[in-house]
Length: 297
Image (cartoon, rainbow, N blue to C red; front, side, top):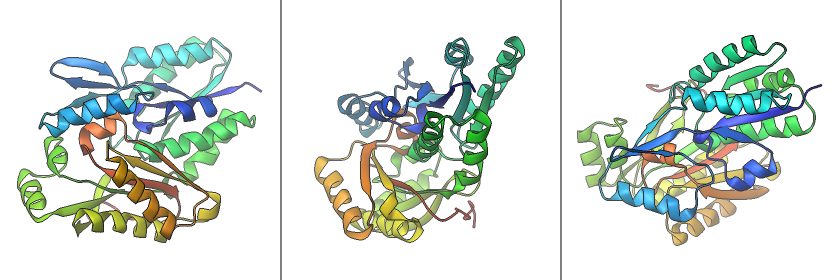
């Protein structure tokens, strides 16, 4: 049986440590600011993250691009040349067109290289929610599972990934076209903090609204406590968009006080998701109840 290489993209927000531990590679998207295009690296540092979020705090908009065709070609060929099968798990199609590009490139390469296998999976998630599925796939690859076995195991669990997110300000979401200008203005004025989830179709959806930063932090912990399954056997992933050390510690304390998880893995929200959601966002991810809520419900 061929070795399987797991590949993800910049939206997964996996750290350099996790990429190395689980032997995961990725195809990179790009950020664009002031006409300059930069590779959206998953191995970015706290200092690099701070610099990006400071640009946004100053009221500037950073835009993003999907994974280029050339990037898919380069990374896919690298592992096909090594005799590997490939499973690519990408950002939800509702949030990025990269998964479609990956499919097109994969089909061409499989025609060109007889006997090659590239399976492309829409994670129906983004950010670390996508990353959780990638880690599960990578564990199976390390255990010697085939590409088809990994696909069949991942597809049924995509919407058991639970996301609960809150943002400090609605300004970045307004600039990214996620909320109307009037909603953002009155939301910021009244201190309203939306609770955002990844819904059953993979859309980022405003699930409810809470007044005040502290209340929103407590609310996402409460919601995760209700949704998570078998917390004692899980690592809960906590992402933040360049929050202060004090706020990070406070959030970790809230989680430990309410949810008996095996471990907490704290990491940065990466440049692609960060460009839309903005600085000081907080998000929790874990496996739990199947997500059934849909945008507009």
